[in-house]
Amino acid sequence: MINKVLEGKTALITGANRGIGKAIALKFAEQGANIAFSDLFHNDESVALENELKAMGVKAKGYASDASSFPATEQLINQVTNDFTTIDILVNNAGITRDNLLLRMSENDWDMVVNVNMKSVFNLTKAIQKVMIKQRFGSIINMSSVVGIEGNSGQSNYAASKAGIIGFTKSMAQELGSRNIRCNAIAPGFIETEMTARIPQEFRDKWIQDIPLKRPGTVEDVANLALFLASDLSTYITGQAIPVCGGLHT
Image (cartoon, rainbow, N blue to C red; front, side):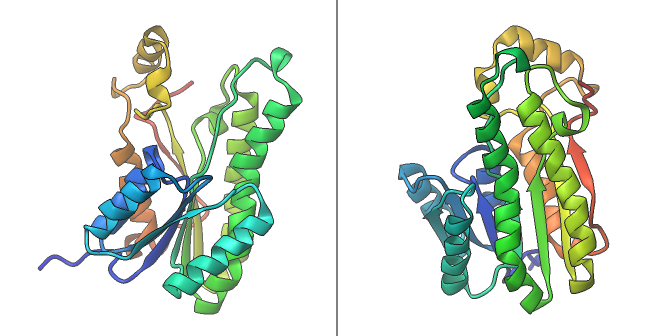
């Protein structure tokens, strides 16, 4: 019998109804983790994911929660700890885009992206600290982007939020390392999701030409790295921002 690397652990994943978050939830469950996941709404997608996860033999529950609100996040952490007892892994995946050149970007588009993408990471990490410090164990995985490393025209709000996540990740690794809590970031590049499927083909072709591996990534590519960072295979890795981008340079 092959041992599952997350057997008996509990993971909380935000923004998990679709895309990268859903792929991570399925990958973790495949490896034995119980899954708590949240999205802004608990809808038919949430119920379907719950059922899919439970069919894999793990405990699973979805929650409606606004990750950009600290009171809502505190309530979420309390609900999850009541339902699952412990939270061993946190994946901060919730995120949005509101792309435009800065010249035409509204203040609201800036604030929305920063609040959902960056403040949500602050909220969840702050709220979960007591749980992980008490159990003297934890792996926190924050979803950044290669855009946060290199920037991208028309995405100054998104790039700023994702760059901020990297700085926050490195700071948390230093603050929490002595408590046996690790904190790392994943920086995806051009990944095939529902969001990127809406990009015009001419832009897709241009990006793919800039990727040394000459293909977009898959959500499974990102989920595989998340699995490694969540598991005991990476117990001496913290404070890192690891790209999953096929070598892409914007």
